[in-house]
Image (cartoon, rainbow, N blue to C red; front, side, top):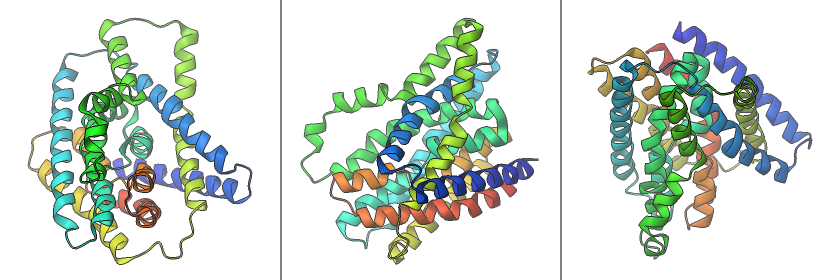
Length: 308
């Protein structure tokens, strides 16, 4: 069933990516328009999608599942962090920063949430949103420190400002907004619930078309290097492989195992390119990581789902 859902989801994603690719190539949406659409997705449709995932009746048994999900998320983060510091020691320092960040942080929210929702429904999306809390904390703390280490920017950033950045992230705000609504049993007016539901339903098509637009803006020439190829193997095969092996040893719900492995198997996030350019990483390498890993994930994700 999971494989069938994943194949249907991947075919839909493939078509949406092609549509986005064509839209960008035809100039229907320009560079600035695409950037604005990314903000629309990150600040509007994705947070509403997360809030919508909490529209279910609270069951105290879910508390145990949420605790397990948080434990799995912490374990996944430990695996990705350790892997990132083991695999790229021979690379130049400026490239190491980019490769390590791309291994620690995956595209679990932007790309992962729509895929998990397509496979497991709103129940899966709910647990994926909980799973992403530690991931986002790591992204803005350890992930950022990878770029700032040795650059004199660590002290300037400050722990307080990083904490504020994490807690005010729209997706984190959406999680505790949804949790309050679900935990309190507050019933929203029908028009408000329909508004949230309507915006939420835009998230998957918008996200996938944006991936196509991003790929359309890249020149494939020079993007596939040895570093990018090795990184892609680590990001799409090694990390999810370790996570799959460890979770297989645990007596947990297959749904929770599936969410963990799928998020672990996600490609490079767009922030790897943005932060590499801003903090002295290898921007060209980051672009290659994004292009190659995103493209190959269309093949590797269904394969991982066959084992779930």
